[in-house]
Length: 110
Image (cartoon, rainbow, N blue to C red):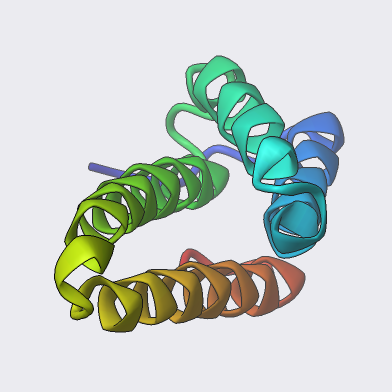
């Protein structure tokens, strides 16, 4: 897959917005992350063939994997071990948002 096409500036700006929403998600009970992943799903096709496509894929994967871990952790809180998974899911999500945002600022794929 060749990522040689230049991305549109609008797509780069929206990728920044999605990372910002992901970072803000813990402050608003995750609703910002839902908005962010919807934007990423919508914009992914527009960025096809550019290095931004990898960012939208990274954002989408980060959201869905974190949601899966969070959901399993929530169920497992009944047996106490779920709290560790909840903490791990939150740290995983924040790490991926921060690492992706840094790569985006450098104009490289995550």
